[in-house]
Amino acid sequence: MPLVGEFTPPGDKSISHRLILMSLLAEGEMLVQGLSSCLDVLSSLSVFRALGGIAREEPQGLRLFGLNRAWLSGERDLDCGNSGTTMRLLCGILAGAPGAHVLDGDAQLRRRPMERVAEPLRAMGAKVETHGGKPPVMIQGGALTPQSFHPSDASAQLKGAILLAGLSAQGGPTTIAEIAATRAHTERLISHFGGHVTAEGLKVTVYPGTLTLTPTFVTPADPSSAAFFLTGAALIPGSSVTAKGVLLSPGRVGFLRVLERMGASISLSMTSDVPEPMGDVTVAYAGALTATEVPAEEIPSLIDEIPILALAATRAEGTTVFRAVDELRIKETDRLMSIRHQLGALGARARVDGDDLHVEGPTSFILPESLDSGADHRLAMTLTMALLMAGATRPILGDESIAISYPTFLKDLEALCQE
Ligand code: S3P
Image 1: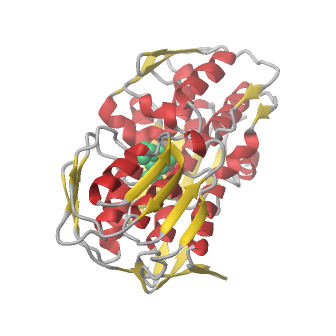
Image 2: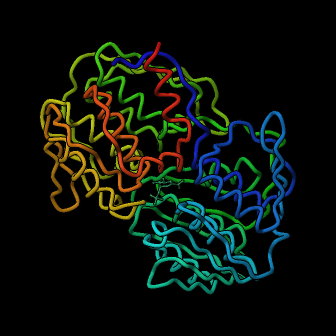
């Protein structure tokens, strides 16, 4: 069934988290329009409130009242739910606070590595304990000293934690030099809220200081949510889909560049550039796709879109290779294995070679009795699109996880199928 029409994806999840969590450090108040109400962002909101933050629903959006570090002392247990972004960014914020807090989450989050964040924060002077490298994380902050870091993992959550801690360091700038460019939301928002941050190539430097919320903020729509229907439109004959008001930062739209290389028809119209580029994206079916190679340095710009791009690769002529995708092993599930097994269950030829994912196409799907997302929201949405392409319905185990990032996914899909 073709996908036809327009839709507005939920507010960008990465930006929504940062708006809420950075309000712990900032002064002033801000009316946020279009904030995501997905479960992950609700985890950040509940932690914000647990630390004393006030967030008020208003007809036009959510009004956040900056806490300006007023929460600095105390001892609390903070539940981050399923959200790795909440936990890791919060570690950076709490590192500069004298309170002692325990950060925990659900069973999936308890399997995710936290030492990558704990280690640099310890080096800056915070006391951080993990449970064998994983949550729960006990963090007791204090006076931080500025440092320079060269982490071997390309992770925007790690970069964000270091930059947010750097705002509370004393006496000089904190620097992080990345091995590959990751999404730049933390540094852009620090600057938007009046902080002092500079970026030069892969090196980002932050200076200690305070932040001031802007009176209003319009949250761009989430490209990672838009990716499912936009990619679906490139794969299903007769489709043409427009995603409205989407965040178009280069660090987030690698999937559009890859789809274009594979032969998809894509047009963009920019509507704003502040604080990040945003606009409308249209993808129309333009015939069969061809395989491509996705090099390691491109991976951070499409890390969350690999499941849906791997699905596209099952329909493309030739072998698509995603290089150095080991970060997928530590997502909500071992997403690399989940992709291989679930696409394999559909009859696709997907294999893992070292840290690379190879997908050979084109294949036509066979249909097992059920599919298993492993309660991984991005897998569940990818498998929903696979079944749509096959014109079949089958149970997808764990598909309630979709609400973690895109609560209105099925409603939006239904509307696009009816136009
Ligand atoms: C995110 C960064 C990425 C991404 C996640 C959101 C962020 O994770 O996969 O969904 O908002 O900073 P890593 O930093 O672990 O790569």
